Image (cartoon, rainbow, N blue to C red; front, side):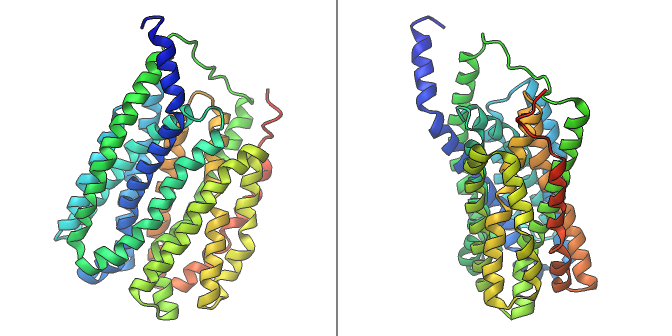
Length: 400
């Protein structure tokens, strides 16, 4: 690279920073629309294939465990050998999964389609999270929340699309959303170009230190606490995202389409909570957001099983708004604990989030079969008590 070319390249990289964060956020939206379509069409699949709650839970388990097992490995690998153009490959895997889900005639093909969508997520999340951090300009909470809000918005839009497209047109129409995957592949190819250029510009710089900011024992305890918080948060969120429609139908006799719309409202509130969590974390610290999010939601989760339909809708909006703000803060906190291991942390926590949600979905489905959906919601209402473990997280101001 010539001396004349270098300033130009740096200027281009500076100008495109915000657009890159927005680009990966949009692709996160596309990715999570495809993911959420699976859970959003569960009532259709239940009727078409005569599935019980355990089989529905196994679909979620397959999708999320593929992502859970592969994401940390992909993150560890790409920390050492970044793969800028792996992003469109992940989107292509999700495209294949949607086509299989749209035309599947057997339960096992539904399982296969779910696995392909999970593989796409496993490839997408570690590298796209790294790109968001590279483009953050030091505002890691804001960048992570912008990246995350795309995913949450996609999760909210999925049920809406299912209600107005898939529910009316039938299972085959799921494959129509593969068009979104093609758009995502094009955007991610452009992001890959920026990522590769960013690496070329910074090739001669001294690598950032990977030394732990706290001693090993403190770091391991903190990571264990963050893991437990992620587990309980996602177990609760899985009970809502997978079974909220059934809960509304069974308890309040709500129609399928109306239940999908109310799921969209809840997931939309979750998306807003994710967006707000990042800037608040940049201002007051990630630990403050974790405290507020996980413990602050407890009174509302405890009230939810006893509410009527109107208050159920109101409480789930509040729960989604508060509870969802924790995840960006957890990821940022973990990335600060383990400098230079962005891909590994993103892989573990995004992957663990999927895995925890999948295991919880299957377990809660089995419990619902032998008890009731209402009992499951009552049991889950106590999960935010795990937020008390936040007291064991170190103060980032007291580094080694």
